[in-house]
Length: 452
Ligand SMILES: Cc1cc2nc3c(=O)[nH]c(=O)nc-3n(C[C@H](O)[C@H](O)[C@H](O)COP(=O)(O)OP(=O)(O)OC[C@H]3O[C@@H](n4cnc5c(N)ncnc54)[C@H](O)[C@@H]3O)c2cc1C
Picture: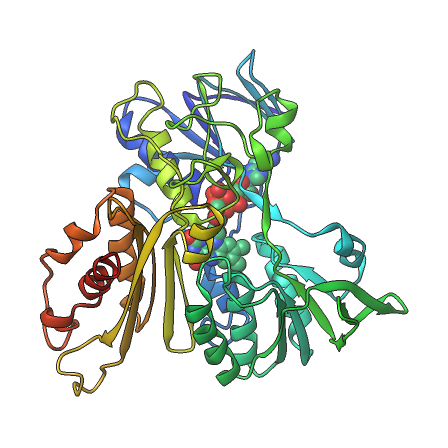
């Protein structure tokens, strides 16, 4: 057992832990920063689906490299698994280390969530979850090598990415989910476009009937039964049914948990103890619009929280804390990007929000005869009275991934439709939509017109 001491200790080296370590080092150059993580080798979590198909094709290409820079080199890194945190004595005990700390950040992330109906199925050799650990990604990749028929359960972006990547590699893939794929983040009119793309890529859709249970024979899964009794056969079943906060350590240390079991934190990512912070998928999140507890788990959200924590360890330096998740993300299906932020129309109705919306479909170049021009669709959702932007969805070429970030900034900055209609944008024929029909501006104008 080795005894160590540090000023700032971070448990976990996922996106949250690594960004927190860098930010803590930049903000506190005289302090020692140490990161402890369970595994030496790690995968870029967001790149995992792409090792299973044609895009990356190998696990090695998705290795998470911490990189070398003067700041990164100053961070001490230990590979070991923490099994006890003693908050009173400011000590962490791992299998081979005892570490004393002054400030501690929990960045222990999340683990796959599996519904109780499927938990038993996980013991079967050919049923998998999508884990972030290197050796588990490798195990699934190797197992899939000789297999043909795959069922992916889960219609969220991870299920969609897994299904389309596997299909791109030649597998016979069926995705099983709710009414629509990506239905949690896109309204029906947008989600059906994702489904069309998936069908074109050869993915079979089994939507509208939830999976009831896994069927098995001689210790192997043979497929699944849907709620309406339909039987689907498969050689491999992949569960993409969400993630849950990994908070056993924090709970055992006596920290307060929020709803959905994330570690309770304030806007500066502090727990009830001002020397203990929590960030990333392991912390309790709130929704930016409603302030309700949120289950959203994203690397981008985790990195934002990490920057807040890393700069608030000794003193709160910036008034802007983390004010809630806007659930902003994007994904690619074939050659189309699907991106979403904030609330959908469906959710606005469920939340009893008095909203208006505007949808515009134009071209992403001008004139539309430019060789790589393609359609760009933008939907904006705003409060009826004030015009404050509360949501947006974009479908388009790769730049949709950045257009949603403009909408995200508008949501977080509480901009209104009126600010967007006079937005100054750089436009250029080979790069962007036309200044006369810039889709975000047009969608804002259409939303405003709809309120008259
Ligand atoms: C397949 C997939 C695709 C995704 N794609 C996207 C995407 O495109 N965009 C996006 O924004 N998000 C995406 N996400 C979500 C994103 O990966 C997570 O939100 C992000 O990884 C959370 O980061 P984190 O650092 O909080 O936790 P994690 O990445 O879960 O890291 C947790 C860390 O804690 C360590 N740890 C845990 N317990 C201990 C312990 N007891 N002792 C020592 N170390 C410990 C682990 O080893 C690990 O280093 C994706 C997730 C998956 C699974």
